[in-house]
Image (cartoon, rainbow, N blue to C red; front, side, top):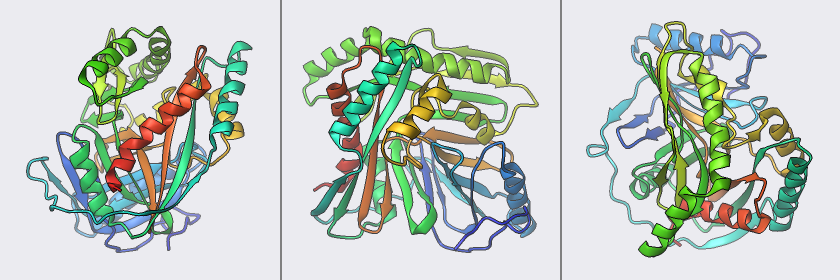
Length: 384
């Protein structure tokens, strides 16, 4: 068991567990197996998390491991404990050479399904949010729901990860051990931040439509999304926030003038890209990502008002959902993605999450159906 200690040196907890962590993008797959330390603590300005990260990296290097890696998961509310896993070494492969053994899943039987947020509660929250917007208190808020599924068999975390990467080759797939022998896993379409040396990149998404199985219908949906004033309005909040937060750390930068359409296995999203050349004094990848979190894409605008509304009215604890997850090396390079299209694995139980952006003009029933469609990305893994 890991616990937070009062001093940085005491927090170097030696687990030496064989808990696998994985992170995959279209360009590379990262596998880490030798877990040296696991820290549970909030990652905000009130905690010495940066010192603890430095201590962990230095400790592992002193043991003779020159290339340690941090793979972690940060909650939506950074006042809650994050999980920071430190591995002595890792394997990085290209997708074509990544070892993903063939796996034929046994038939799944769903034993039980429990909504953590019922549809009437969600739709009531949407109506309250629209009322707050009409009063001028908010311009946007993202509301979510969660459902817990219980199956007739245990699931191998690694097999679930392999299935996810095969079904969603263009997503950022992840499998990360967290507290109580649970795993957070998923296939996020949204890159919050990537830092490689002095190059920084962000690919925010906001504004969505579910895909159809019909090609002609999909063409209509894409066109409708691209020209939707409501979705363009929602998307602009996110772009403005990214530009405001990152440009101050850049010597030069560029951002998309108009959004493109990003296609996933189940959804269409409005997508923009921010790229920049960082100043020498810029923070590491994790701290840059924390400056962006939570974005209007998963929280709302103004962020403090929207976040408080979520904590007060959403009706359940998001914890890792709509937080961030990813990796960072000892030099501060890394990738962090928004924790969406994800689940929490606990033995034979899977908790799945999905959200929808609410702005003036949103319809409560339509937004509920959008969350149900987004959840399908994860349900496809279980093939029942």
